[in-house]
Length: 157
Image (cartoon, rainbow, N blue to C red; front, side, top):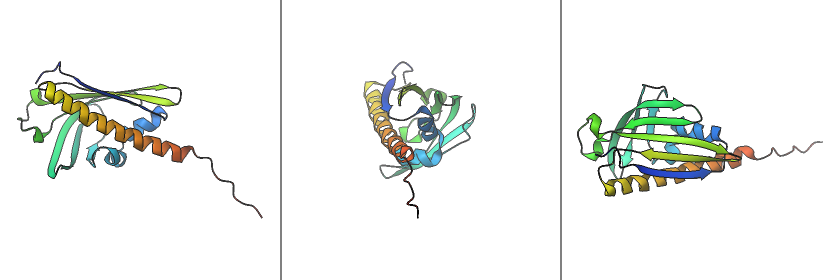
């Protein structure tokens, strides 16, 4: 693995940063856009995080540790997947960093994943993260449209 082979992905979401952050750290919301994963964590630095689910017909249980959490701004965690076929050793973990930056009515989501083994692995990681971020964007923008609708006036007598 090469700490310097970094996969990058980003998207712009038409929503306030708080709604995007909520979607990043709420397990029921994560399941909606992250390939159906069941995520467990208490979202504190040093705490564990697990992802469980089914990927292409294979059950998986990935794991990591929350390395940095600055609510509304930065979420950083380590990540290891046994599906990689590599041993569960520190050198086989990725560091995922997600940064949020709000500008007017949109939020920029910038994601990076280090420690990709080669260019092919980096490309696959970028493809997977792009798909996940597209799902996040679609999910949050749909929620924002629903919650931003004005209440209909009740017809009075």
